[in-house]
Image 1 (cartoon, rainbow over the protein chains, first blue to last red):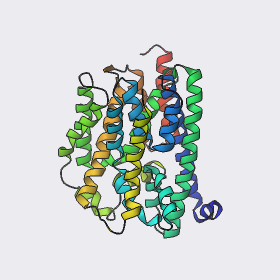
Image 2 (cartoon, rainbow over the protein chains, first blue to last red):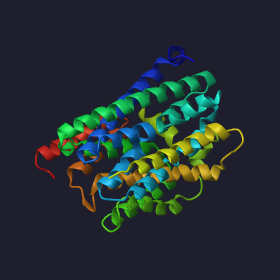
Image 3 (cartoon, each protein chain N blue to C red):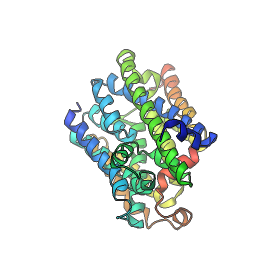
Image 4 (cartoon, rainbow over the protein chains, first blue to last red):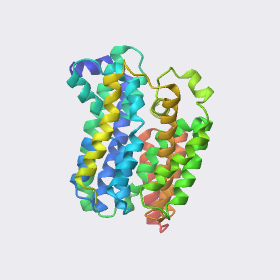
Length: 248
Length: 103
């Protein structure tokens, strides 16, 4: 399985979409590195998080918690709740990660919202496999290089707020989550959760508000008749919906 | 401060989520209800992160520039603008507002 044959397997449009998503993630990764370092963390923290955790949302959340004075365990808990969605994604793309055990173990680290979503847009097994590896490797390289460069720059920039970098991350998250809010139950739960989180922020330790947002879950109701009717069983709706919409 | 053990804990837990599916994919099937719950929980957490990330800093209000930038990005994302455009427009809006004196 060499990279060149993987690239040949994919259509031009898919490769272009993967490149666009990689570019966007590079911007976000650089913001992450710069914000972490200019906020006072040593360079190894964003770098290690990016290589070992490799999940942007939880990295921002964890660093956000500690930079606003929260405890390390609150940061870990927030990250782990956020990343729980990778569990169903793993089941959804399990078919592309067959083969020797070491390949499965390495491939698992490349599982992200984006790579799962690209797999779900392909139907033919060879293309599913190619989409996973090309997207996964591309994002892993681009993300880690961008975080490192951003971290190095963050030491020089000092004030990342002047560049508006603090708005980049919520902006990307919003773009990612927007399509999944088409489902009314999800939307209601999310709005209730967001109100709870923002209202709680002045009063509870950093990191907790986002977890308290889960109080909105009961408002989601039963699995939507609408969304599930069209999705094949086992598709992670969020990632699929996300990339279907914004990569176009 | 983020100690090394915290980084490793988060990394190990995250990897565990990732690897269960590929290792057990054929032997274990998540119920449709659980899948749905995890998908909604992810969306709820992401929206809460957007809201608190856009509006708050520490225990207080983040100022107007950041939420304005996120709002511009949200509108562009909703209009299906390409991802990189969304990010740059959001950051640029916040930067320009600050440059012109908006907090």
